Amino acid sequence: MIGTMETNTISGVHIQAVAHEGLSVTINGRPGTLAILNEQGQVVATGKAVAQETEAVAINCYKSMLRGQGHLRTLSAPIATQNAA
Image (cartoon, rainbow, N blue to C red; front, side):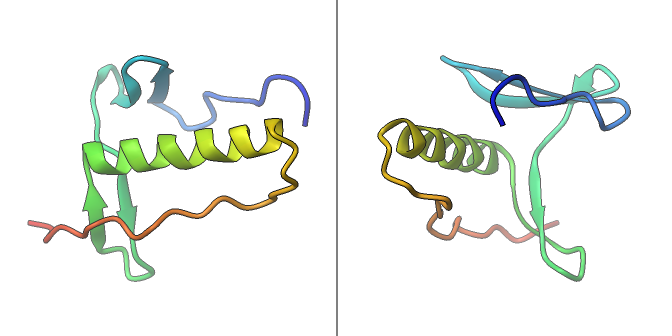
């Protein structure tokens, strides 16, 4: 648990986190978009909102651990869904 977790495990995909910019993704060097899919593979949310929500949940989980609150799970409120084109 302590130490650096393995990254770069998805061929061609690079996910980057910059403290003052948030999360971004590239696919084979070209811009990509994070998305959330349901069990049927339909896109229910995509774009910057997904990246921001993902980052916020990860940071809140980390902060809870640092505060010693004993939380093992950090939840997000539902992301406003978008109609996939």
